[in-house]
Image 1 (cartoon, rainbow, N blue to C red):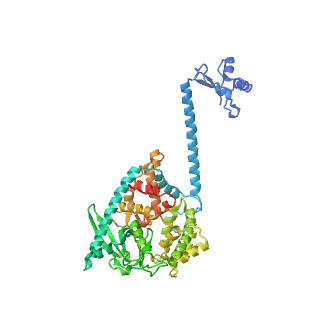
Image 2: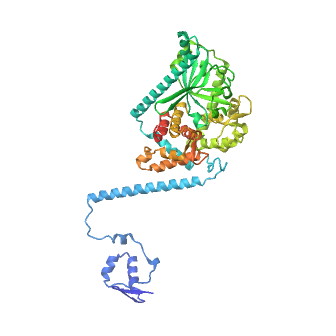
Image 3: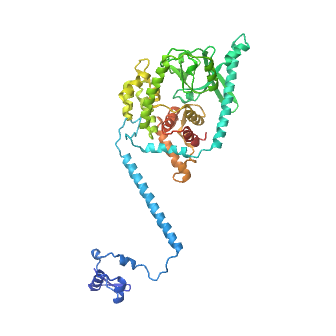
Length: 516
């Protein structure tokens, strides 16, 4: 039906000629304004014909009223700013859309389910990054925080004073214990005991309570004996210093030097001291569950060590060159794997730990060659057959056919240095104030502070977003959803450490969110 419009009234009509005339004039290039001047009477509204509508740039321009004043420079500037902001906004919007699209494509990549309990949601993307990888890498942002030399020096000075007091306290207790056992106390005896090297140590264990024990050891040059004490602090003022390994002459319990007596050359930062748990009845039950007690030297009195080495010359044997060759072989494997683990170390290392634990059906901590080969294939870690066989020969020195999977992981992937590990232990000890070896997720959520993260400072992310990203990636490393063990906490930071070149950057990553 057609309507004739007059003012505000409408009536039925079949007259269409006036509009057809207007259409014809438009097609000839005439504008609506010029057409209206020549035809002052109101047109009849025809039936709407979308196909007959014509777009014209000239028609659009005529919509703008005439005789407008020219825009001032102030409004021109505002227009330019608005135009720039719109362009930048659209650019950022396009980038966000592109990232979202890329993320969706990544998430839709094929998965290989290894084990629902072990590595649920593991994404088999060789050479690519998963969502969890990207969230874990957000922790690297703390490395970009400007280095505060003054604050760092204050913390270091306080830590050095506390460490010095601890060493002095333990050394005094050792002298008291050993001099009291000697009936004929003399200056000569005291001088003999003073020719010693003092070192700090830790137990290599996934048990958080044992791993965080503070151990201080002494190697006496005059009789090649050693002893280890445990330092405990209760509150601010109460401390105890008790023997952990009694003073005696001990020998290596594994490796190429198995059966050989400890000498001065065996003591350096990173060296392992091995003891048979059955030989020490006073050890805690959690430690006696394992056949071997392995202690790692984390710090040493280098001045005393150099002085004693000058006075005593130990002949080099063939084992020294063999051990050096072993280290070169393992270093080559580690370097090759670190390239593959770059930026996805957290997901792979935490996944490895869970997977190896699941393969250990008997709970002995030992696995065979086939298990380790399978693990490398599952996690797409490429090691040549020759390199694998060489590494296996080093680790399987006793020809038992089985190797501790923790030792295997440390040997072929490597581990962060003792300086970095000391900060990881400090962070965990702060969280585990009850010294149980595990920390509830709720405590971690309370203690983790993302206030100083660069993305929070710049406004790109909120504190809660950074915290949730951390918790999500940490929970993925855990066998239980409501708590984190020391081993899992260490694995997480072990994975982060792979992508960090400088020690101080890594220390920032640990120190900043935990406030240590």
